[in-house]
Length: 121
Image 1 (tube, rainbow, N blue to C red):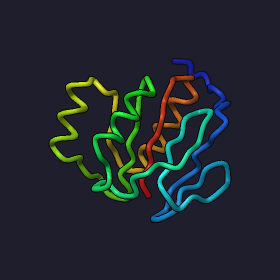
Image 2: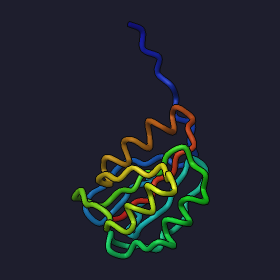
Image 3: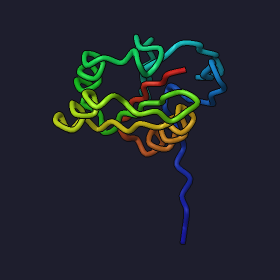
Image 4: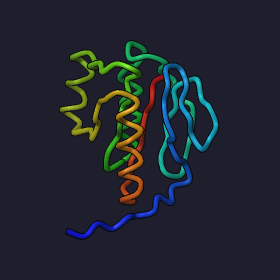
């Protein structure tokens, strides 16, 4: 089997996460962000319980291939109301720890997929 190393040419490189701090392009961020291969912005929710239906609607409008929701150090689940919205809207949202979301984001970016990561610290 041959493996081909695909260079990651994304503008925003997610290097890591330790409790309370994200490292993006060698810069520390200590609040939640929404990042894609070409954009980086503050994201309103600062913890899972802050996420509202309006936040998910905004994510839905991105028309992404995949949206990764990093829940911080621990894997957490969204309330049933929000899970229901995700199912009914066929929102391509994957929930995981923030560290797992960072690793997944890097792989999908290298594949040139339209991916966003909503990362909680």
